Image (cartoon, rainbow, N blue to C red; front, side, top):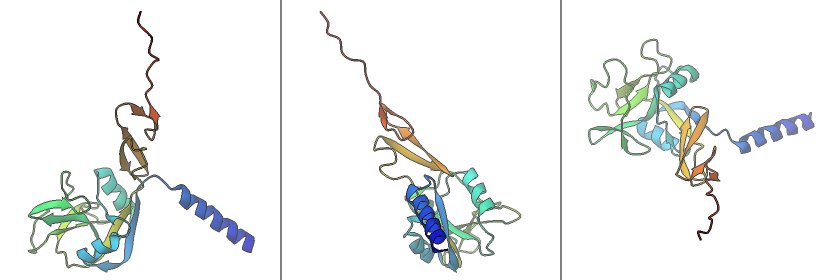
Length: 185
């Protein structure tokens, strides 16, 4: 029995070392305010920054229902909806019907509706002191993913490298080679 346990632990450890080369989502077991959620997520790197409709759909299909819903990494800063991890203004929007509406005054943080019949996977502006589950992510792209020769773009369950000119390959690991110079007489 001890041998089987050790082999299972070893297999798990090797899987963790290999990595998955994609986003990993983590959510808290407890509801918390937006500020506490942001602090809690900082150990991963941050609250999730939803990149596309397909990611919204994936989260809505995958995450368990929580009646308080989930905080995501959007907040109103200087009256502009902003991604908290990058301080970039919100470009793509996925608001629920009639949102953002600011009905409750001070609705300056954003939740995502998960497993809600209407507007599932959509966003809602909400008061930052409401209690919700923190939804965080771990990125697998880092400085070395594209060998310093390109930009890493993560998608659900995968990533791509946009290689700089002169480089190619899955991780921009290959360089274009030029033919040998020939002397001119």
